[in-house]
Image (cartoon, rainbow, N blue to C red; front, side, top):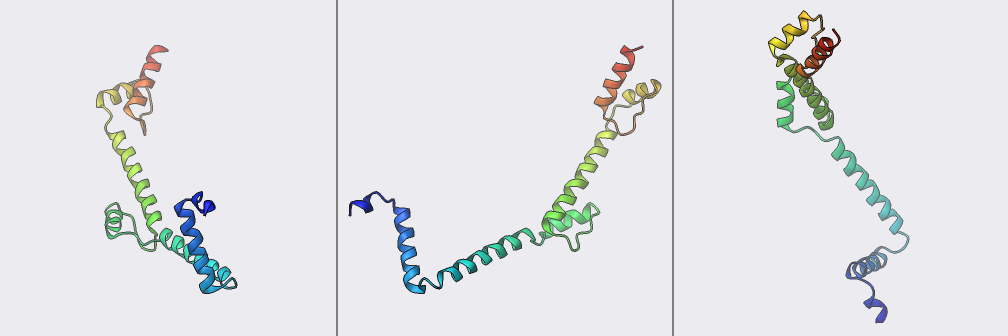
Length: 130
């Protein structure tokens, strides 16, 4: 009785469950049960990874011009993220102040694909080196 006092409740419950499983199925069936349990866990993980995308996700993909057919949820999310990142880059390029663009072009600076901050740095560098 003194030994049981040092075992916490969770461990005691696990020991009782193991004992009941051993009595019901016997020692020869336990490896088969463990194998079956492992296969079930693997199938569950595989199924959750290759899940079908939600209807809302498919609709968002279509609005962005992405074809969702035959793509898993993860593939679709990656493609949507890439498309949004590209759009964000395009938006930041178009928000450059026209005055900054004019000054940069007068100094002979290539303005394609550069943010306003990059252009201002290059303008300052050009002006300080003249």
